Amino acid sequence: MLPTSNFAFLSVHDAQLVQLGVLAERYFRDDPGTAIFKLRQFAELLFKTVAAHHAAYRDEREAFEETLRRLSYERIIPKEAADVFHALRKAGNRAAHEGKGNHTDALSALKFARQLGIWFHRTYGKQADFKPGPFVPPPEPVDATAALKEEIDSLRQRVAEREDAADRARREAEEHARARESVEQRLVREAEERAIWEKLATESESKTAEIAARLAVLQAVAEQATKAESLEFVRRGEEASTKIDLDEAATRALIDQQLRDSGWEADTQKLRYGDGAPPAKGRNLAIAEWPTTSGPADYALFVGLTFVGVVEAKRKRKNVSAAIDQAERYSSGMGGSANFAFAGGPWGDHKVPFVFAANGRSYLKQVETESGIWFRDTRRAADARL
Image (cartoon, rainbow, N blue to C red; front, side, top):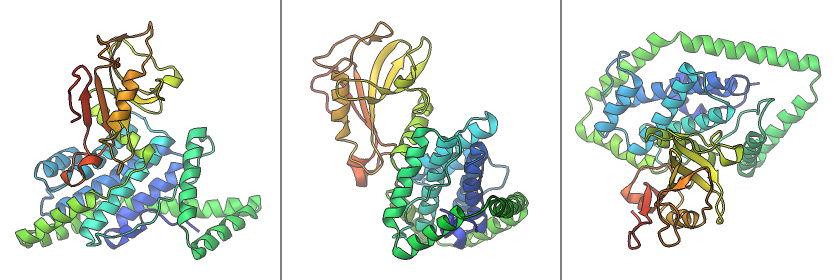
């Protein structure tokens, strides 16, 4: 028996979206790079479907990046959703073209894709109050790091807390049945499941013409829609975007990408103080978990060997404006080192000039304190948080 997918609710829109999500979940354990690439395909198909719903789909010749930029400029796609599409697109590109993508990256990509699917369903499925239930983590890989095991265990715990009696009984029965399997029975079951996955993968790769036909139908319907109907989709999309909910780990992955887009080298998994990542000449580094007397700063920003700023990263849906106070405490609690120089100062108690707080969410007026990048220049005593 195959596990229930995090993407099953999308079957009312397009079975291919479900298949791509299911395949990504399947590949997660043994081939995270392929899992991420499948999720990039998922994001691209989902975005083409969005475009078709607005009579804005062109054809296969327009690259995903170009469509994303065009629909963002035309205000068809809200910035909140566009940022997650962009992060998933970039992760897929790194997996496909650079061979980059580990299990932690793949887990974040699964969370990104599911939140985009939920946003899409709430917008185009006309279910603004759709409650999808908790994200169900895929089976952990044999070589999972301690941090990955801890995260997957935490996700499983959240699922268990939300289960009703029937779901719990069904899950426990499946777990007990597998625990009693003989080696021979397990090999037979795995071979049967592998055949199903391979069939799904083959079908997925052979449906280009079918997908194009479905998009053409959606496009034709949208071309006949009134302006008011199209604007209603935009309104629902904006509303649904305020409910995009990424957990702490996925938010950090999103902020990593936003820092990279701004010219910083950022990777919370690898560029960490505890792993010996040092400032370096000629590089703009965002080093994670930098120690201070007030606890580790989420990111320390270095231009070459000059320490210029700190960033406090909060989970989405948290009050990010108040987090600037914590970033200021980090600035006051920095210790010096022969490996870098401060950018002048100090300025009162502050050792670094720029402090930031962010949760990965673009600024939204309706959730002002829970969105945007908040900033203060500590060199100016009267400088207000922005």
